[in-house]
Length: 140
Image (cartoon, rainbow, N blue to C red; front, side, top):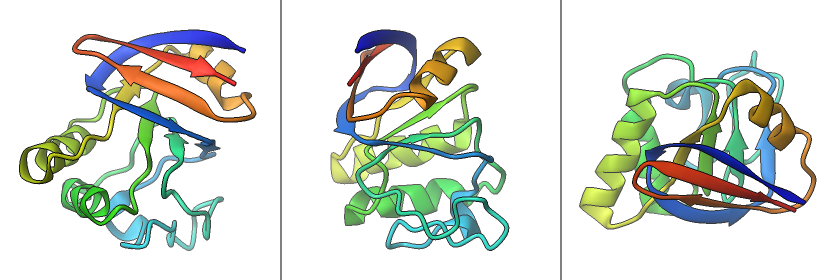
């Protein structure tokens, strides 16, 4: 158990089991609308993102990822939250669009590499509380 403090990229609250990705992911072409990873070259191909706290080092490309993420949020197949080591404007835009159009929030948090490693090693559900500036992730 414990707590990690990070920086909020997009505010919101979520609880879920972490899904730690070994490689960056593009939502455009890398996932489908059911929330599965379909990129044939991704190490976690076939994993389902839906309802999970997605822990990934960073996103990978395509400005269209924002529209894919917004649609996954709308349809209920998105991750519960995103945790990265660096901010991503494209993913933030997808979360913002979903909040504005559908009143649905997906928190996005950036952690230091040290706290990211702690979260990646965590087993059991985590709670993400991303306020206007700072975020707290409660482990276990």
